[in-house]
Image (cartoon, rainbow, N blue to C red):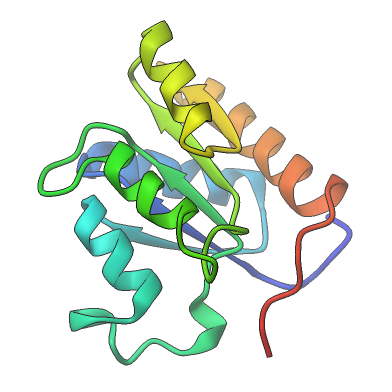
Length: 150
């Protein structure tokens, strides 16, 4: 990786096994990242807005990338995505939908709501490692992202 700076990746997923697999896959990739987790769309918005149990978060915890599951309790990924992309403070944060859904209607709707990418969750750990490598290479080495606010 061309940078030693750790990137905050915020993963919103209600499935504990998927969160653990993502953590292990990122570790396997040796990506300098700080993977944070929330379990639903409400927690995702609270994290971004530093509300509730996230009120003590510093600016350094602002995510450089959000991995978003669609089907979660309380506020699903679609609602959270709509809220993120309609807020000028957060709309520039890349959101990659990483979900089990492969429905064409979901894919089309997700892009309409402003998602940057749509990826169906891989079924094997090795495939997930490859997805994480590709994501990190693309989002943290190839593209230019907007600078964080001072």
